[in-house]
Image (cartoon, rainbow, N blue to C red; front, top):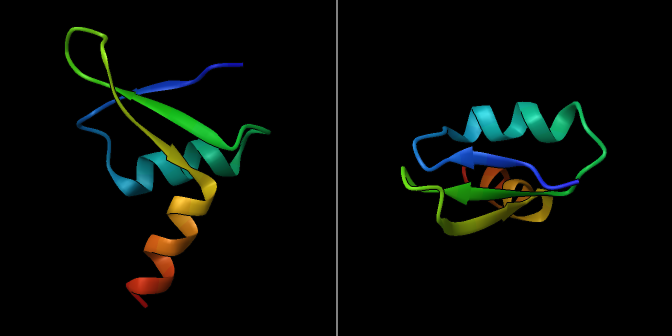
Length: 52
């Protein structure tokens, strides 16, 4: 299953999607639907740890 979110999504938005699903990565797209990057559950954990 591929899940995409707009580049304007917040970390909190991404965390909610990852928390309530079985996926471990989200594709981040721009306004044209083009891939800008990928956020993984590991990325999120690292971000949260660094900002404690």
